[in-house]
Image (cartoon, rainbow, N blue to C red):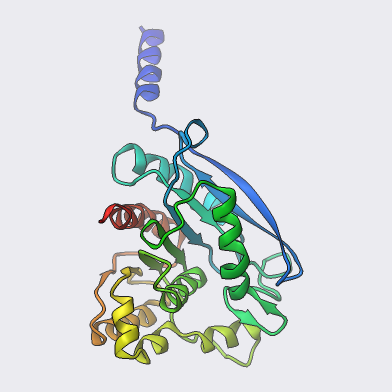
Length: 279
């Protein structure tokens, strides 16, 4: 009887398990940065068996992290597999770039998504990285089929990139985003770059024409009620509302943790998929 029960449970698990995508590493040589940079790329189940082109989500990591964080700490492959299998998300390519700093904790020089003296990361991202990724993979490289999201430092990068390039992204979804100056800007290049690229200030300074362009982006902002960055997210929400830019804002129970971001990722996948499907 025990053997029969075990067989039935294994069969049930095999029957209900979602198809699995895979993650690989893509590396390119950057003339702008003068070095090689790698990223992690999630390819949905069936990618290798078809010639179809796919929408793309750029998924950014946070400070003291690297391009493998979402796969290793965020369970993104499992969450994405399950969302696609449940019909809550479209099959998509997920690109996880690297904005790590030097040193064992990735917090040294060159950390962040913005340009700093001697390290033009933002220029690299748009002039070299995105074109190389979208050439190497079967990605539908238009605004409607391109979205961006990220956590903490990557949430700040998400907001700034979409604010500067609304023509490129159908959806932008900062999670627990670093959306205004935090800490002493004189401490290092990273903090100076955050202060100089505050999404809150950028929204407040939008012209009517620039605000109209932001209304072509579907915005989702999510931050836990116990997160130390919550007030910056609230101020971003207020600034967007004052400019008449629609956004979905979520505050739920939780803090600045991977457990929280895994919950948010599931919703983000659904949200960006709706944008991909809109006519």
